[in-house]
Length: 227
Image (cartoon, rainbow, N blue to C red; front, side):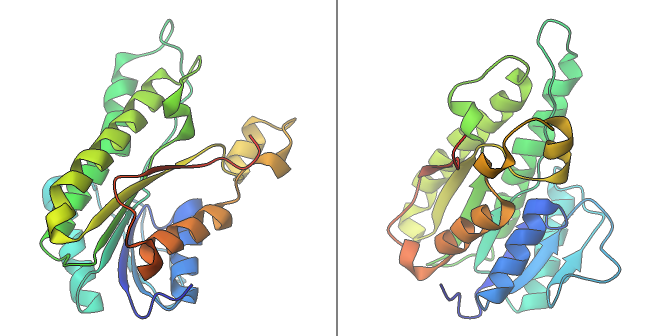
């Protein structure tokens, strides 16, 4: 799958999935700007532009970061919203502040980054969001997380409808458990082979960035491995 010098901004670009996505997009021929709240890695990420220290939930900060990314790449063709976080917390014993936190990090960042990107995107543009398969049917301990990811799903559908006439597609991926070091540490007895590897999810992201995905918009695509 070739991305033919597509100019792509990736939020949460310094995390596990973000790094996998940046590397996959670069390998497919894209130009990439990685944006994250964390400081930019000293060694960089290949040929990607790295923009660190950004609170993407702040619309002004998101706008500045997307403007910087577009300037560095000579424009912007696509946005991948990966920035997010997880908290396992029951409703019975939990804190209402967790709901505000996960809303801010999982949903508001995607909204603010997308709004900031829209002035740069043109016909053929792409926005890809990361939801969660668990948002389709929540279980104990993930109410706040799945509520925020449900918001990502509805946001994706609504924005896809808004942008149809501009020929900009908006889709969301719904992964199950990602095979990351923190998840392995939290669930040491699990069968890791059943989980989704970040590189596998990154490959699906690259497909949605490509010309071959032009007919897909407003889709909520499960990527669940064998979970």
